[in-house]
Image (cartoon, rainbow, N blue to C red; front, side, top):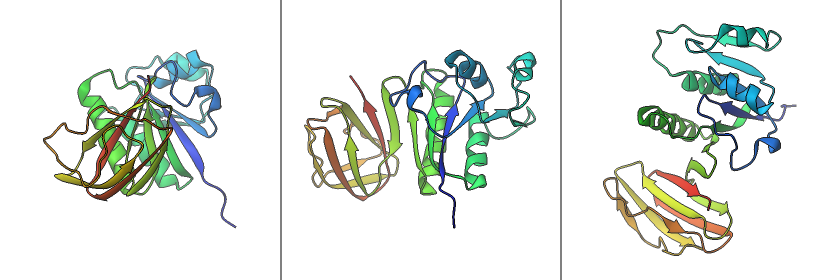
Amino acid sequence: MHSAKKTAIIITNHAPDEIISGYAQITGDIFAVDQGLQKIRALGLKPSFIIGDFDSLDESLLLEYQSTPIIRHKTEKNETDTELALQFCVESGKYDKILICNDMQGRFDHALAIAQNLYWLHGLGMRAAIECADQRIFFLDKHSVLYVPQNTLLSLIPWSDYVFFEYSLGLAYPLDLLKISKHQSRGISNVCLESEIEISLESGTVLAILTYQ
């Protein structure tokens, strides 16, 4: 009998004070990514794993979590600490859902790198998203059903050269037979008129960003 897979919650240095789904609702393994350990302590959460090179973390803080598995990497490495945490989750085979907590308001290159990591997870068939205080970021499936408060904003960004939508339901600006190229910003700031949104994607890869108002 196969054991049920779990959710991995990745707490980064730029994790917000609260996320859309709520820290209080977290169930799964919590990963402290480098300075994210400081955020975890401030939030009163208990880490399941601590991972990173710890080049910017006070080593005395690690002493408070001696009973927690610590995965230390050298400072000179190709991957970011967040990517290393995600690789660990994937390679362990224990998780079928990954939630990255990051406000995406630090350095733009770091924020974009996390979006690239999200694309990698999407390609592996993982259910993965980035959550901020007021946004949820993820890649659309071929057929997606979203449950959101009415008037939530939805931006759709082509991640491939072109994306072709078959249809949508519940949006202010329907996506029926719509084609968007990678250089166009045509998918920004649609409005969810209903609490259940349905989107059918014919081809291409689309980064979706829900902004809760």
